[in-house]
Image (cartoon, rainbow, N blue to C red; front, side):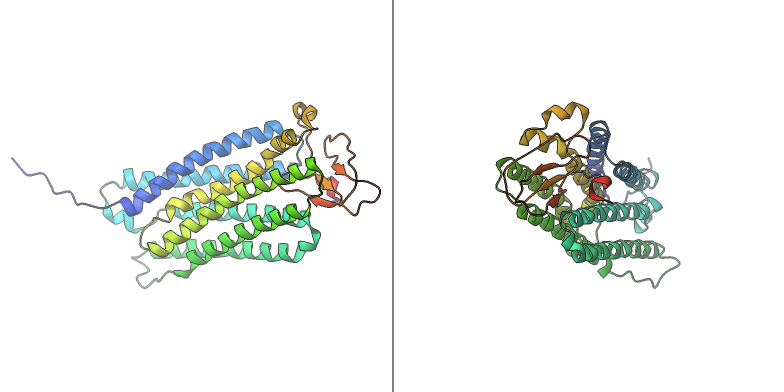
Length: 327
């Protein structure tokens, strides 16, 4: 009786184990994204066309990202099963997914930066800096993909040395962007408090939604950065990278979909909920008694009186209509 051939023992935990965890979490997040997307389109049919288009594009990119991750896992664990040499190279799915993730992160950062500018036009210099950093980070992302492709072609690029500082720079800038954007929006919301019970409650809710939606991507980026620094020779960072773009999209959708919850909890708008004619902008004046009218379509809700100062626009996690802002 012939002896069975020896099967080489390979520890896949630091490589495919991390990727498997990332793909599983990404699939869960993608399901949540789809649910939130359907809720958004059915609840806010009167939102601006560009916002609907943004949500659609982000959902498509998110679905493609998950497809690339799933394809990568299938190639390594099924088609190249028991082929250790395959683990030394990156297939096109694993090099395409970071490009999609970079585009998603950049789009969300630019959208949130625009909201900061809408919150306070005097923050235009900060907004410009954030836009530049976001675009630079995206550029570094493409450089990182180029390095990965070059390093994986070891046969034709024997002397190729990938830039180890690129992924750490990307993750550091991404984390900084998330924290600065979240902190700035919360600060501007806090400065917009008026002393009116209902408006201050709305500010508190908007701040809570801003923090919850902004901190998850930051935590994922920090986890990925730590993994990159502690275990650079493994794919442990992929467990976080696979989820980061999903966290961005879900955070954006959560802020858009939170408008109905904010309206119902602050009172006075429930009769508009069936028609999805919720507040698209909220304007607060510095002082005065409360007067309010119907909030239909893009008509703003105001707290004002004759002695009020110029309004401070608050867009937080709410939508805005270009016609309302003179855009």
